[in-house]
Image 1 (cartoon, rainbow, N blue to C red):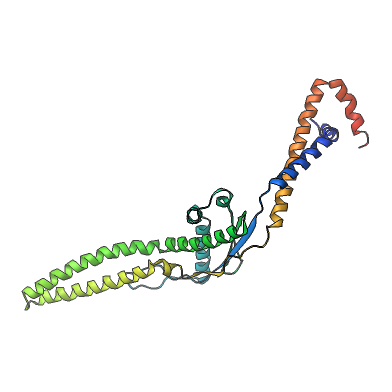
Image 2 (cartoon, rainbow, N blue to C red):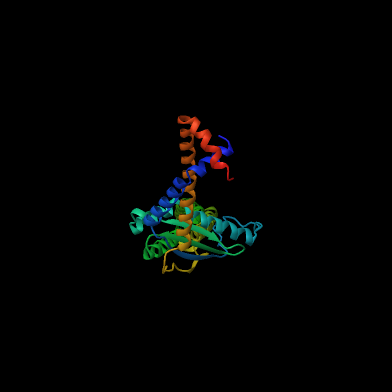
Length: 279
């Protein structure tokens, strides 16, 4: 089919294309669910160290800008995760359209601010979802950040248990033979080792605490209650529906034109040029 044939089909079936576009747009507008948008703003500051150093060593090179970027990206990924969405749906017992709420996460360039937006069918629902999702996102990001310290805590707990057993044996040996210098030396070393592992375990317990891990993520602007639905998004849906129906209408016109030409080739040859003559 040539361009001339396409133009002929559009001119011949313009009424069908227009009727389809208008009817589809009208149906979409009538059945369209309003979308209320609520937003929450976070501030990401310098994250605290999550590492538990067992031995003194030279501090590695650290760039504050890079640390902030990594912390912000990790937080955004946690916010968009399926885990946080499922937790939000379960916590609020959402169903239907409310459970399919639209989520948006945007960061302000060259800053530590991140904005979360939620679209829902009702204003109060959008506000509740946004606030709950924000709180659960902070908790999930803190949990993920604390995981290394949690693993170290488990190892240190085992080390402390072993050190306690060694200390008990050293104390019994020292009590059995008070004059033994070797026994007292082992007791002193056992006490030192036990104190070392106890100190490191206490440090790991602090860094494994989600409160400590979430201290750099703060909500600066709580979820707002939208006063009216988002007109811009409704218009965008209407435009997309109109464009889509136009494309479908043109495609249908081409199919009908092709069928007409096959059934009535003589009529198509006569009518085609006359329709295109004014062009």
